Length: 73
Image 1 (spheres, rainbow, N blue to C red):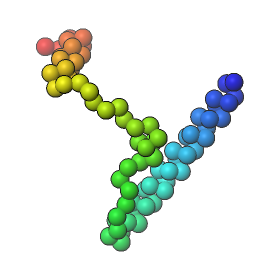
Image 2 (spheres, rainbow, N blue to C red; image 1 turned 30 degrees about the vertical axis):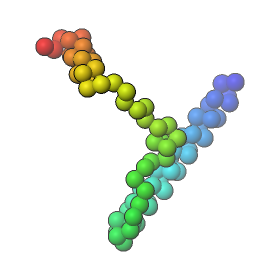
Image 3 (cartoon, rainbow, N blue to C red; image 1 turned 180 degrees about the vertical axis):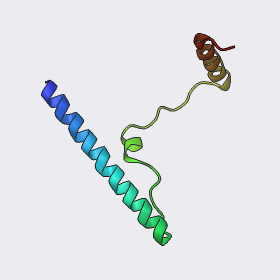
């Protein structure tokens, strides 16, 4: 089982690497010749960021709690 997980991690890393290479080449060429290019990265499509569901007050309170834990005022 660990061998399968390792193989999947290697494949995922390779896919991310190749996608970033293609993304960068695409962006450079498009900027050079005035074309459009993709702004969304492969990693963000495969692993979309979690949508924020907290209210602004909850975010502020969370930051205050973290600051207090670090010894801030």
